[in-house]
Length: 261
Image (cartoon, helix red, strand yellow):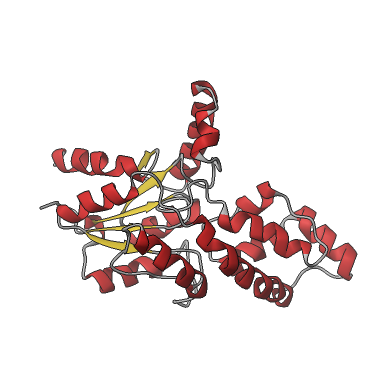
């Protein structure tokens, strides 16, 4: 048996959707519907936050706010965020299943942790309606976590701790130090930090790198390392206790942490 009782995973960029591509393109297209040009870089910046909060953050970016002011004659309000959000969610629902392929090594890592007696939880910045499209596709590939907390399930989302607290209740797992939170974004790491859990960032499969395995394979080792160092620093700055390349590396890290006791 492990000293850890549970591992709680993010979804896009962590267990599925290597490079976190599904939400990124939809944000750009949703803003286009309102005559606003948003870049991929702008769309990726707040990734990991609940999607309404993500849109609010994008709206507050000077370049986007200026476009909105010019087009609509006023700074974007929360009501305007609601309008973009109402467009975004169904658009994301339509495409998300196409990006729900498990990150290589995910199933083996989960199976290894379960064999040690860990419960497997999950939280996400996606809404429940979006995740309803993802769950069956993940299950077909052999990944079905013991619980799921979505961005719209609780009064407050990431980087607050409520999602992790609910995981503790659902999984009957405590204290926080016996729970590992694994995520590829700063808000998701912040969620684990706020709850007092052991936090593990995944660098190479996540949003900060934003590359497919095929794209990475075509790059030099030096180019890949530059991306790794950038993503690692983002995760460490968010409070990650440990950073690995992908979920495939997690069992080895857990074994190392167990051996250190």
